[in-house]
Length: 153
Image 1: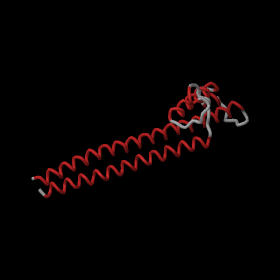
Image 2: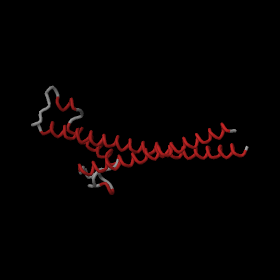
Image 3: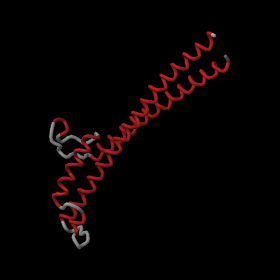
Image 4: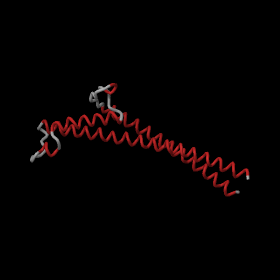
């Protein structure tokens, strides 16, 4: 009888810890998402993505960063299909406008794809936190029911 009571209290305690950790995950996800959006706004990257609200606005979402990165990749490949094709047998020449444009496009493309990964990671952290909270609430409910059952018998 006593063992069941202690077990149920441990389950309830584990549920409380799960809710706290899940809430921390959610808070960290929102905080990092906000920091990332602010960093994108500070850089003020606008590419005039076609369609709707995003045309000419600052890129600050996963979808916008993905679309912008894909657009830059397409334009960069219009200069040369690959870095090797750009250079041929030679070396990078920063005074060559096509080499410089290609390198700048590659740099911006990488920046945007890094933003895509970062936005995705913050969303995954928030989703994990939400799952932890929901699962912990269910676990806590189970603990409460176990506690009630242990005090009845």
